[in-house]
Image 1 (spheres, one colour):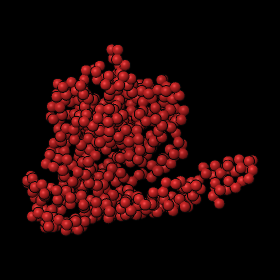
Image 2 (cartoon, helix red, strand yellow):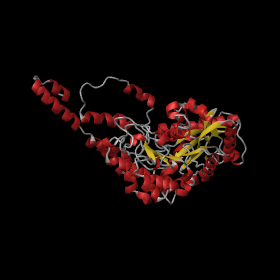
Image 3 (cartoon, rainbow, N blue to C red):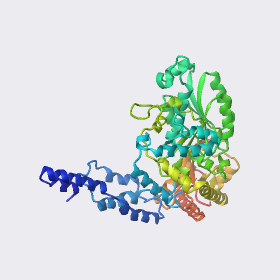
Image 4 (cartoon, helix red, strand yellow):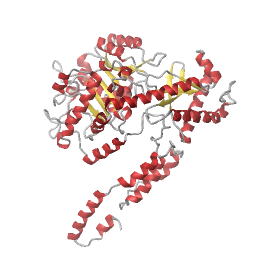
Length: 543
């Protein structure tokens, strides 16, 4: 008999009331910790990246919309979890998973996640978080000091000052970017001379008051699509996001950016922000951050650095040079669930000025009151878990020395992959990496020779090469032994499909990279057979 059936069997009001209390206690006492422990241990021993079953074949297993009327036993749910969830999830623990900005978590992160869940604090207000409010402000201050390097007196004045904010913890890099741009808009079009400001009067009234015809955001063609999301949410539209072409090296072109800034000034177009990127999502490039910072200052424009990927390097003195110029930003986005090895769902947006969020403050009568310590005064998101404890644990348990060791390992693996590609007849390194993302593609030797000489491919050659690289990556994922991702780079000469290896798993080895490349070569042999009859060249490996 199930817990609910047991409860319903009680005949009297008194005993039913008593049984309801016991049943609720039983429901709350259910735990799956021991049930899952063995399943996760077994997963950690597996080398397979993917279970090989196409997602379309799973659809029929997840069409039932009727909730279970009676509670399942822990063992029944374990059976489901092992078979349907663990059995068909992507195994991010595998050292041969080298394709996305996700890595295995340190053991203490699982412990901290459990602690955060059990505490179930809500960071929106002091009444549901208490001391965790101070811890969150302290952690943000530590990150702020590493990125911006303000003097100690600045932190004595602002760190725990409830009327100021050095940044906010967010659920992801997207929300961090949205926070930066929306707050910059509120600050730029704030109250002045009889105008209540954009937060009360709205965008159209603000533009009329300040005399602008349009609003744009300027940055590299490799800007993350969250910038487009921000523009849409703010009512600016995607067309307000102006992408500046990259140079041959893959970085934003500062000369082209200056020309655009001049044009905006002449056309009464307000430049909301210049975006610098410290680690582009597709290629890992770091824009010339210092040069962009000087341009932004010269033109009086808000400077935001999307450092979701590369911002972690600023926390290590040994690696800080990789993101040189980050301190010139007005705001910086960093994802802790990327290169700070926290679980999904924690990032931050740092504000150089402690008063940056003042025009974006939100208050109610029941929380986030004026003068309170409530963190929700300065965040777009309302209820938030105490995810900051993940960062607090990392900063203390790993420290700068531990982080530096992990960063070193990723860069060593990057150098190794680059050296293997240089020695290979089958692969072509597309860009020299700035950080630990390597972009390359399969390319038959005779086409590689053309590329190295700078001789452009024909349209048919480009098309077939793209198709082949896409097919190799798709088969690699379905086969499930190793994995790198793929992306399509929009270039002046045409679209280019490339492999994208992300070397952020410090537990991976050089041997894992060797196995991955060999796997791709073997897949290329079978894929090449489809292209033997195409045009006048042969795609077969080594031909």
